[in-house]
Image (tube, rainbow, N blue to C red; front, top):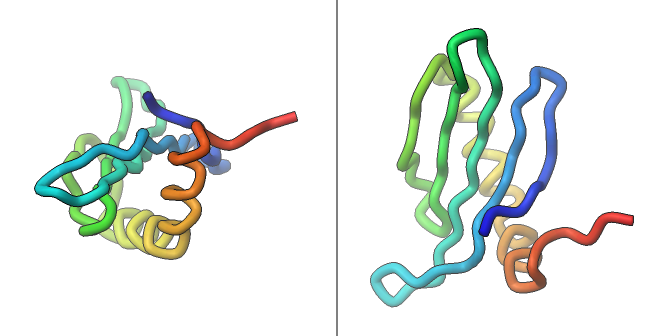
Length: 90
């Protein structure tokens, strides 16, 4: 299951996964995706390692570093909301 997190002005949407176990560790995938004329630009970053596991399309190195910082700064929120079944919107 993927849960919505935020949408940026360039159309990039951020979603995050349920918690899953990998090598006896609780992990979450945070996925960044924006539409393009030819499909999508996509990046997936795995918590807690901050490893980029998917990078497709035309995101720049600077954008990737920004995404990594977003994930690092919000990691506690991703775990909290994944445990709660996503963010609750009115």
